[in-house]
Image 1 (cartoon, rainbow, N blue to C red):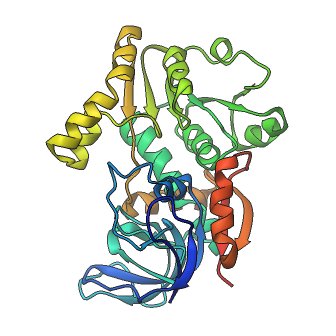
Image 2 (tube, rainbow, N blue to C red):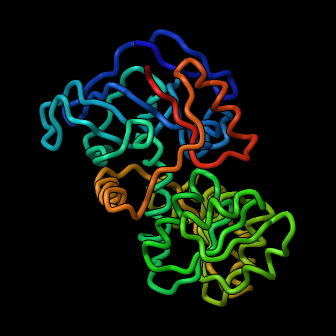
Image 3 (cartoon, one colour):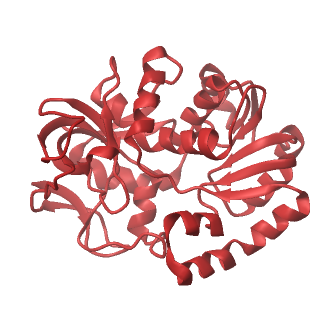
Length: 331
């Protein structure tokens, strides 16, 4: 089987032969029809997440997948051979940049009716991120004021749609050339971050979905109304995440120290900081699939590349400036 993998952190992503995936009792073997690229994959390749996600090498990359079921484990009940599915690989199970991948039954859902393989593959990680930020953690409801920075990107473009479907008033930041694009997604207010004063224009948010971190994270804290929440996707992990992830006392202590500064600044402002690491969840994907079938959420595919160009396309994600998702199509 051909797959893209790395031999160590910071090593180039290379294509080569690999053993067929092992199929456990609760696993589903999927023939990959399309797989989308995420910054998570590039961060893993660079070793940015090694304290939180320990890996064995060679490590196959790729989390999002859409494809056809080839085989199922003995205990699998939700899927059968020939089913069309989509999903996101859970921690330690990456490898969708390959001809085939075996995933736990709980990572998968049936492919939304009416979507192509490419469109379905564009959805899992980014929609799960938005769902877990807005529905689980942020409890976004009718009338909530939500700020989605980088609204034209992979996460931002679906986060806008989900927040709107929940009844939120959505503000986003983009370049001027993307204004009409995010308005078509449902954004109520659009800020040109290169021309406008974002802190003045976006102040008073109930929730900010921060996907940048660094100085932008501090700015996000200042944009909140008292009692508001920043959910950080790249910022430092917090103690709550360490407990939920079962990191153990050493890493829990480390995460407490890593996020101490931002949590202290948040308390001074009367707001809350939370870290979010998306987790795979097929049941949530099934609900998201229904939203796509009703038109509440539509995939945003900015670029489609052939399987052979996966490595080049992945490193290109760091340059930014892309609308929506980049998807690898198996032909």
